[in-house]
Image (tube, rainbow, N blue to C red; front, side, top):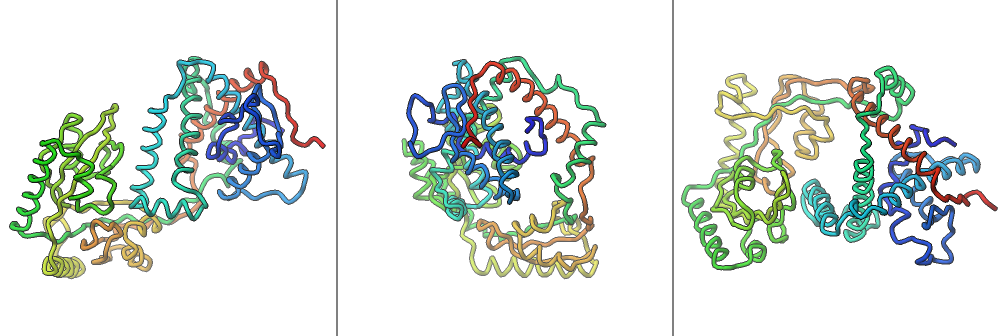
Length: 437
């Protein structure tokens, strides 16, 4: 068994998704008597359950469990080897109080992770449903993320404190190429991708209806300025789906939100509500609760102008008219006064945004116009999407040029880690009991 087995290191990366041996498993605290100890590292233990959980986690990500007893034991020993390495770093980092990770920092980082997952799934309820399908609660997921982040931060700070950097480790192009050639199955094939330009047409409310929404926003802003709680008022008045008190979590200025929203969110001081901000969704009141570097923790209240049936029907007719003119070659999206977005995506990614668009692309040819179709975002239920197919790029095996930077960085980190681990192992008490008896 060799620690430098890079092939297996990629698999056991999943170990960081389960609780570490250092989380509440010190020997002096006692352990469950039915829990079999497979290794002792300093004053901490590693249990058989952790090995079993690691195997299950790896299987869930495509690893095939060996059928032979000898091969399975070798796999378990490789996992144990990695758990020992992880524990050694965590123990060493824990000796230095300057490397400690505060509970506040952990909570903030975990919330960022969960906020990102909520945005990916659309709502908190959908995330909870997905977790339930894996027999996991949101509380358990939060605790696992906290353990993972604590370990990651401790390791980062430990290596930084030692003045080590992977930039000082040299990996040649020949070594990176050899790694790629020897591990082709570790790199995903390039999927078939579609280059499309898209426009999204939204129903437009009348000026009178917009004025009503703006008046509502001004009224609630007055309540806030009089001392009303922003989160409570968001629950009462927002037109945003859900009732999370307008919580958006930590956000970056990266285009995840419309430009008008981001400009205000990153331009106002914390603790002071904004004036009503108009976007394509309506009027927003924005509150920045905290600022951390390039991030803002934000809440908002949305006041959406009421869209009537006639507004929706007018938008549908406009979309159909545009599609007919585009198919006939009478005009282009630019000539229609629209600003199309050009994207390059595989079909499954397109399906997440618009199943109808993905279905229309399956048998489409370059030059075809697809739509009008609906989009998956519940906030844009009445929007209609048009797309022009510009290019189809065939799938196939991934090329070295697509992964070379990632491979070099991975090899540098592995070599740096191996050097540190070798030093720590030479100084630590390690008693491996797996395979005994």
